[in-house]
Length: 486
Image (cartoon, rainbow, N blue to C red; front, side):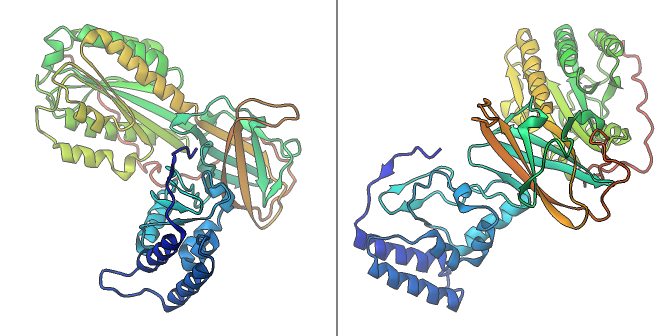
């Protein structure tokens, strides 16, 4: 919500002159070389200026602003302006101190990242200038939410004869995942018309039928850990972590020290006994190299996670890397710059990274650069279990944000626009909700749809693989078991 206090109003005559100057110099784009951008836009600006002289107490409206900027106008028409503005209380506003070139660059960047766009830090109002921290939520390319509402993001979708439609998406409230929504918490619209939940057999399927999640736990077993007696505390914390995370996904454990390679302790598995047995062996682990190859371990850990995910036959794959270390990189086999480049690689765009550190040697900046989605730094081993528990809780909650919606479309031919509205909160009488809502939109084709056979919404989907999620043509050899280190 826009709750910042109002700023004192300038006198009307000064405001009109100032507004004309703003549009001439910033919106129209007097460049550094003093050249105007577009003669038609200049003429429109002068017309607006004349109207301003006639209406000295008025301000330039959104209609005028859109007329001045065709690119912005095309963008704004994607959603209703009322839904795009935060706390616009019937007063027209103008955007200040932002050239056309700058606004176009921001809109282009927004469209590429498919994220919310906050267009301005300074806005002028007719009855007093109010600063609003979130002026506008522009949802582009099928990603649509309301200001302050839920963020509903499509991950993948598919449709297949006779008339099945599946949509895999996430629901978040700010940065917090939203779990526990039922089929009745979603409404489906096709071409603006509500689709009957009864006739379409609307279902929420278990996401596990189409998606798989792997977590790789990468543990620092360098000399500073094994020689100080810290291995026992670390193993206890790791067992507690796997107890929680292993309930919803496959978990593997690898160890690293100063050696150039990471060492498999427990391969990816859902068998509880094998994980416990492998971790117990770390209590007597002897480092191959007592140094710390932290950067190299992160790079190899990501690659190992990708290789194992690519072996899984499910189309949607999500990986999590959790790194523990008690100090910074000492081996210098891989630079921090190369490690960060690997983390930012397109290959790992669907991965989440967490980091846990202990002791005074570990630098918080290093920890946060690895743990892009969360990091925990504790002073001593006694609090290590709590740190791992907090990371496990985040991973669990992140998994709850996934939904797989299935329904039988009434469409039988042509292209259609589907809109899914998610609602969370307290249910009122009559079925309405007093909580938050958000939505997503995308297009699908229904050519040659229709029975027979009869549509079954409980069918498993057949998603096409997204970019960055392709399965490898040949499965690489399995990692060899760790050699005995005693």
